[in-house]
Amino acid sequence: MMTGDEYQQLMSSIRELLQAQRSCSCGRLHQTPTQQVIIAPGALSQLPEVLTELHLAGAALLVADANTYKAAGHVAAIILDQDSEDVRKLLIEPESGQSDVEATDEPVQIVQREAEGCEYLIAVGSGTINDIVKLAATRLAIPYLSVATAASMTGYSSGIAALRCGAIKQAIPATPPVAIIADIDVIASAPTQMQAAGVGDLISRSPSSTDWKLASLLRGDYFCPWIAQIVDQADQQCRAVAADIHSGDSQALAVLTAGLILAGIAMQMANTSSPGSGGGHLISHYWDMIAPVRGRTRNLHGLQVAVGDLICAALYEQLWPRLAEIDLDEVAARRLPAKEFARQTRDHYAPLIGPHAAEEVAEVALSKYAEDEELHSQLAALLDKPDKTWSKLAPLFTPAEELRRIYQKAGIPCTAAILGISDTELVNAYHFASCFRDRYTVLDLAYDLGLLDELREEVFADARVVSESTAQ
Image (cartoon, rainbow, N blue to C red):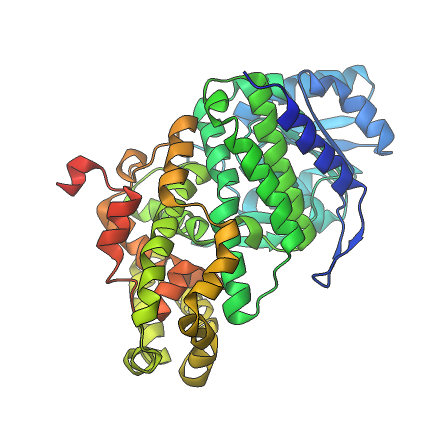
């Protein structure tokens, strides 16, 4: 049984960040608008006190869906009514034909309309409700407070709202909550698969930060070692209690919740989701995007991320030993012209998301498609001294087999088939998921080197993301 040291260390780090304004060696000023984080059994009872300390008064709108209102919204409303707070209630319902609420612009607009005259918002829920309320509060230029109902994702404290715009899920900059209240009694009552998804999302800090550093080394993209160190702390302390999380231990759930919030604050302070969203996340977003076309129910994001990260970790391990034998001139000579690359991208996406959205994806993909001198400049140093580059990536990297051991302890499914994802969807995500986001990952590197397709079978075998029955 854990001692609680991990929880105390994470909460100490959170408190330090909430009070910090750091002029960093990375060249950015790191700060956060989030002022309070409370993670404890019975934390909901502190809601009136938090409002008082943050000087939040006047009319408010409490937003939930049917499930999250039952989990915590009803109790929160009673507490606020007893404290004579002027709080309206809004339950977001699924769109016609849908079983669950989805974060699209329509519910955001509903919240905006219902919040007329309100001084602040209260989001009661996990990913979807928080994204909806976060974006509505940003548009209204009023603060919001988050009441967490599951330890399922880092989005509570992040500076983005993940919104489906047409067929494509976009990461839209949005103002984080001024406070987060996570009642562990509520968190513990959430479905166990949500906690498993939280582990998948949090452990993704390692492969995502590896991609983040890779993009910095090859393309000169922004990277902050301090932020990477913070998300690594959250990741490592979650790993230490993965089995206890799976068994439902309340202290372990507090560690997971604190780790998710700490990682989200770090990404918020970095002003980019790159420390926690790499190639595995792109694969998950791809599966979300095409789920309606395939007639498949969307999975929890963190569960899909875990499978995606196994693929990306195995790709790193297969790719790096091959770098010494790569001839950059041959790679450049074989490279598709940009127009042909864009055409192939459009042809793949158009039947799935429509021609207009496919054109948008192709434009994003082209924005990071290097050719000729640019390609040489991007890859020459890597191919000249791959060991030197790897020495800078290795401290951030976790091998696929180690990731798998952690996932199994946490009860995370490790094959695509268990999540209802077909072999075709698995292969297509591997080849095309990198296209719709201007974020350079190991998927892009393998493509740039002409090895993405060649290594696929070995990568899938090493990642073990295909069930044995399917493989046979």
